[in-house]
Image (cartoon, rainbow, N blue to C red; front, top):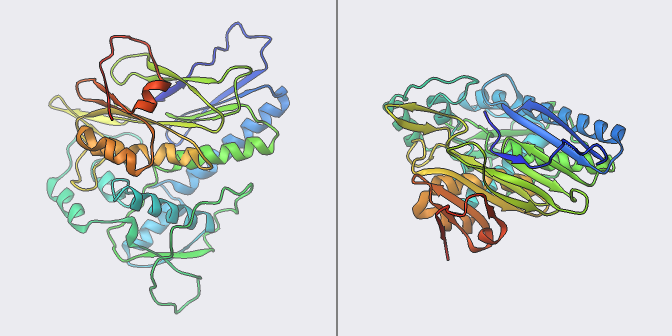
Length: 369
């Protein structure tokens, strides 16, 4: 898996610049943390703590290897409820709220469909799925609204209605995933949770909390195409490049302000080809098919949970395609968004147009009203 957005921080020829950077590999992708203006020992410790947190979340949320999330999936498939940590319960309730906002276009309950397409694997094959199996998953219609959150893990409690959307609290030190917190079940055994379109954004926001705890207020955090900016790169904003979906290098660059995040979903990150047709890992929950007609989507978000929004909100825009992307962006309250269609035409909002500097002035653009 390749990084979809890359920092344009130049480390060569900057010996006098107080810049420290480390890379790692987690969530199945390259991660990179750059700290500006902190003494080396503080920067190293902050980045080490962030990398440990990323690994903790990876272990907590893995969809097809042993994890707290996969254990919950096994319980749901058996028609049972399971005690999960308060952190995971809150994440699932928040993901359900985002799914409702997107009217189901963002749907982490379709892990079974993702598995049927072969994308729940470190290495996947160029093989089309069984159409009958896909049709069966679509008919089962797993939704995040099928989840049931019990008010307490007391025995003998009947199935109740799910509570309202509880926003994730990014506490400084979340409790370990002990599996002894809240009971979660489902009305629909077809629900199989895959938070691959949510976890990286959550991790970005957690990283921001951790770095600030360490007294680090200027940093750039990149998790495989989702980037969060803290503070600035000295006297200038952090600058990032948006990867061109079909050739090396940047399509455009932009400056990120303090607390802003940028996220990209593309058909070139996890995909295979059969008979010249590209099939990517972004599955349309409505049809069960790999989304077509779009090369990439990039959005800019801000606010207390900018990282989360940058990850989850790009998926509905991508899946909605050229005809519906603008409406999907409005539902997700996105002012800054762009979509690159199958012909390479860049469709973008007026606000996004103002933020970008295209590397090729000849890039064909269509600004939406």
